[in-house]
Length: 74
Image (cartoon, rainbow, N blue to C red; front, side):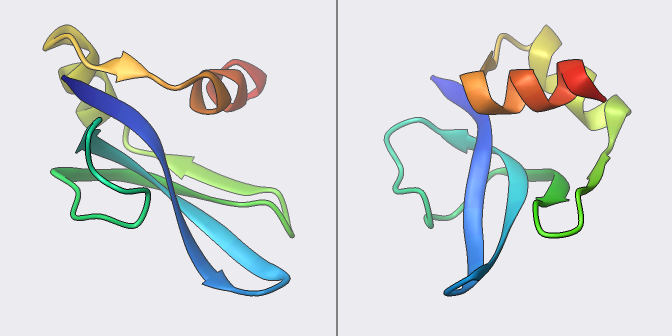
């Protein structure tokens, strides 16, 4: 099963996240299938490729709760 979720990167107290399509059995820092965008909580910067996102949703990818909340806000 493919999931759209955050991939945590950065240093302590300087965290940012990639939004990725990944096999749900992989680790949070594991190899992803497709990079969809990013989110930087320190300056509230958020960017997502809507075409890639819609493509994965059409293929049946499940969206994590945190990513869906972020997309609803934006």
